[in-house]
Picture 1 (spheres, rainbow, N blue to C red):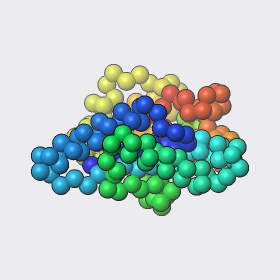
Picture 2 (picture 1 turned 90 degrees about the vertical axis):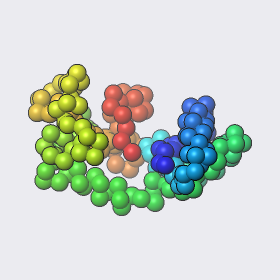
Picture 3 (picture 1 turned 180 degrees about the vertical axis):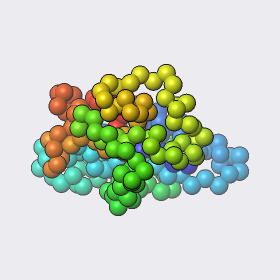
Picture 4 (picture 1 turned 45 degrees about the vertical axis):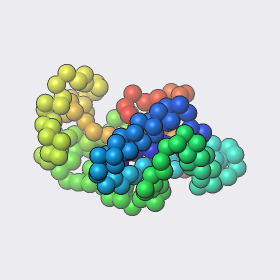
Length: 190
């Protein structure tokens, strides 16, 4: 079982606890039913908020993230949530993420820059949706266009990158420009 874990820029909140408890119950049920379960839950240990708060605290992003990873583990244990069998950190898999991102920029993919973020037109990538049984045109029905000429080429777009933040050594995030970090209308890609 793979569950997307927390971004460790602060202490856990009730939403984190709810998610952890729900998947803990599912995991325990599968085990009860006789399945062997390997439970994997990641930590996003690098993020614009982590970098900014670490800089404000005068520590490295790694030190900052480790502090909140330890706190999250303690919080979940106090709730009786079983620890994951494997708990990878995003920073341990940057190479794989870069390779996945590069795949989005393959000759088959059509990059579409929108307000500083990077998208590609999934209709230009024939295998898109094959694993889930989705057809790109069917997935597009009922979805509003985001506006602009680039979107008109492809109603369904998939986000493959994020604009940079001032807290990052590389620039500014669109949500931060609006004065509300991370409030972009598009879900963040991890």
